Amino acid sequence: MSTNKTTTTPKEFFNYTIDYNGIEEENKLLRETINQLKNELDRYRTPPLMICEVKDLHEKKTKAVIKAPNGNEFFVDIDSRVKKLFVGDTVLCEQKNLTIIQKIAASTKFNAEKFVIIEKPNVQWNKIGGLQRQIDEIKEVVELPLKKPELFKKLGINPPKGILLHGPPGTGKTLLAKAVAKSTNSTFIEIVGSELVQKFIGEGAKLVKELFILAREKAPSIVFIDELDALAAQRMELGTSGEREVQRTFMQLLAEIDGFKHLGDVKIIGCTNRKDILDPAITRPGRLDRLIHVPLPELEGIKQIFDIHTKNMPLHRSVNKDKLTKELIDFSGAEIRAVCTEAGYFAIRKDQSKVKHTDFEKAIKKVKEEEELEGTDYLHMFG
Image 1: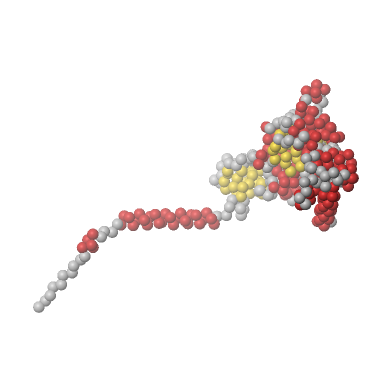
Image 2: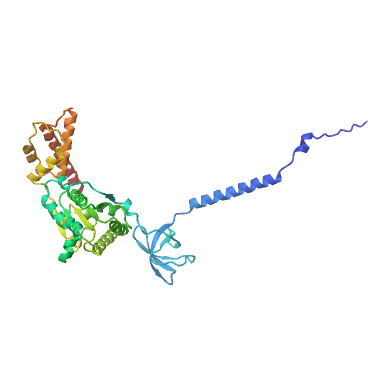
């Protein structure tokens, strides 16, 4: 007796179909994703390219002299795919052998407004004490040509293009520059020479050029260059690329000064604590040829400065101004201001409604000690 077994298939089996098209589409998407990730990894592993400037072309434009960002120059090959290359173009170079592999469109202009301080000062002449002779001279050299240029034109003389303020720190050089900008309603454009040298190696000359374009656009304007000695020190044998760049920036500054028209609405005011190390080229006739010394204030000047900074302070009857001004001999204007501020703090700490004579004496002692401490640190650093 034989038994026939019949195999039964679940009903659900016949309802199950394989979506081959969907799986193939998913595999295709996964392969594309993998390729994309591989390309991303390749880009991450690719060394960055160096941005350089073409200085000269040789051998039928198959080789070139380029200037690297650090100022050094190299003689390099040009990739055959790079066409229509000219001197002055900005290019991308492979880092290992500096071969030029691509030309790029790069702006050669700075936005100079990002790197300078531009303002309309509100410093009045009567807020400056002890510098009447310097004020009179600045009015004659800077203010008068800006306010009444027809006087100079009638007499056939050319006013100075700029002046140099020199003297110890804190004596009011910046205040003088801001005050003349206020009195002539000029735009005050300030740049610090040391920052220009430190921050813009490779680009300093371009920034100077853009700075004076900006000054002409905002005329009448005063270009105030603080710490000029950092940029215009006496020239010597050029060693490092940094020293060469400082010289290029300095030469551009001289070129801009020489390019100014007489009776123009742009005046330059240089400022330095170290006139002795300046290059004579910056102070020769036709450039910053009017030198104005801003010294430490004398006794009468100290009284004026003290009165300016205590004008709005409630003073106790014990305050002896004559005695205090004698104790402030050899203090700069900035130090006298610091003394008045410190005296106010001493009064606040004791919850006083008025500032007493003893508060000023303590402040004088404190400021003097701080100055002596700074002087000691300076000697340790350089000597």
